[in-house]
Length: 348
Image (cartoon, rainbow, N blue to C red):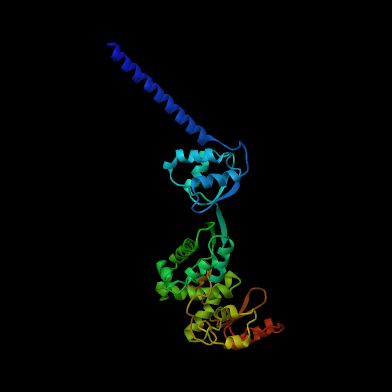
């Protein structure tokens, strides 16, 4: 072997050794950066990464919260793993005892903190919008506007002017700043799940989804006790069959909107609106609240009873009657001493 060839081979070996050493330094440095922790122990903190925040801005936020001890080194760790995807905005539960790799995993996977949001049965669209706004889930005004957009309702399969009645009452787990579109879509989807098992019954009875939901909403507002829902449903079914007006106070109150002051008067009952079931025959044009599964089922499964009237007994329950004279006696028995107007006609 010539001296020149020996020299070339030696140089090649040296380059290989140097490359290996450099690779070792690189991978070792990368492992060190990704394994760094601000502390060996530490409590979990809630940290919010702002929408549109860059890796550098996120690193600064984490450093200020004490989750990482060096924003520049965390940023470098993020750049070395940039092929794993971008970071995502939201609220995260993080601890200074977490490694940089684990923190980056949270930020890139979008494993944000979920908040419980309770939407009670009988909530109206207005109340739901306020609840989502108060919880920081979505802007209340945007919720109201989008929920009353017929085009958006149609996108979700609701061929009605608003989503009133189709925002299912439930306990949801939503991230902060989810937005009106996503929140409303989730609630309508939950309604669809609840309706799925009832759809064949409605079809058999010749009731549309909207008609059943409209009646269910009235039942929901009237029934303080779940076991009475089929009885209240029977009263309204019997009245509808006879062409009698439903005369349900909750529909009158809904039709009044913000004009309702908390005390329903005789003049209110006589003031005609599309939702006044004292002045108009049949069901109102749409639901007056979000009914739960029990009310939806009761709307399609009324009890087999002849009742046409009911009156509140004062304990959350009602006294049901078949004839008006029976109803009058019930009114006298349960509401004679009440200062406010007695509910002399069923459903009120």
